[in-house]
Length: 49
Image 1 (cartoon, rainbow, N blue to C red):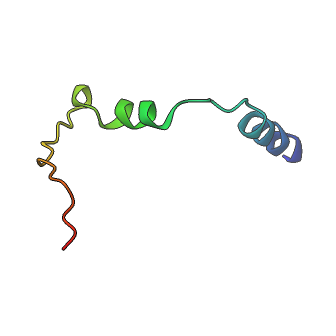
Image 2 (cartoon, rainbow, N blue to C red; image 1 turned 30 degrees about the vertical axis):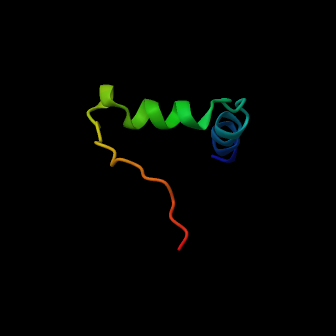
Image 3 (cartoon, rainbow, N blue to C red; image 1 turned 60 degrees about the vertical axis):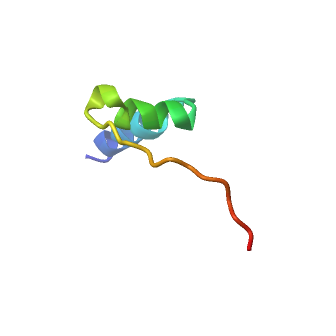
């Protein structure tokens, strides 16, 4: 059982991390092709009174 736990941990931790741009990851999960199409409000300049 200990060996099995070592194998599972090695497979989970031993992988090389995926290097992706944060914008790419967000668009892949929340883009219009995935059913999320948000209407963004019109932006106005910041007013300093």
